[in-house]
Length: 278
Ligand SMILES: [Fe+2]
Image 1 (cartoon, rainbow, N blue to C red):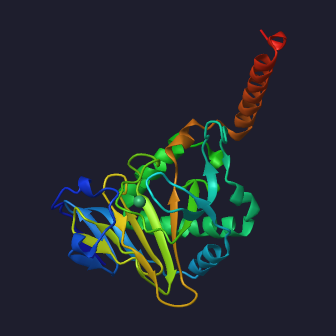
Image 2 (spheres, rainbow, N blue to C red; image 1 turned 120 degrees about the horizontal axis):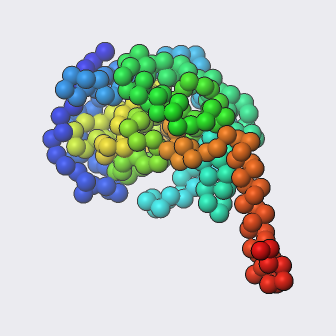
């Protein structure tokens, strides 16, 4: 395993929302590498050699992607989300499993059966960080929302053809690392650039990267197709910080029922003051 000691050479906050270019890095990393800071392991880039990866590939090819629009990106992107989601006021005001968790049970099983293998790699190479992440989840997320217990991830997303501009990750538990697996065919580009350190990860097929996406600016080089049957999927395992607000599932359903009654009463009051409940 190659060791790469990280040294921040420049500040690139001004690059956020910009598209990465080849001028932003000097070193392209395409072999298994452990990243260190002051000789302490902080990140990993490693090829996954496990037959189960082909199950994830099937999931990435077979899932029905949903178009999503994100405010910081111009183009719609396509994603499938599996596992737990927190409350979203007005739209889905209760903690739940994503609709695809139920409608695509085979793909859910594929993603979460593979997860312990992935997290074993995480634990083996970055034990202190892994123990930190798992402690945060165990202390903050009710086990009703964990498809696999004693694991640091409640949710997995498959994204296709995302070439995300420079950004920092948001929404996950603070201090927990980002885990991204790349599966691709007949695609060039898509290197993951860390401009403040002047290196990029090659993001080859079957490579997993684990990094501090909340603190380090990163972005994806443009992607180009070079043949038939082309695809580029990034599979991301994570836990949203808002999951800490979720009650045990039964209580969560009761909360929703109470809220629905209150809202229905309010609507009735607005229509006819005689329906005032109190
Ligand atoms: Fe990211």
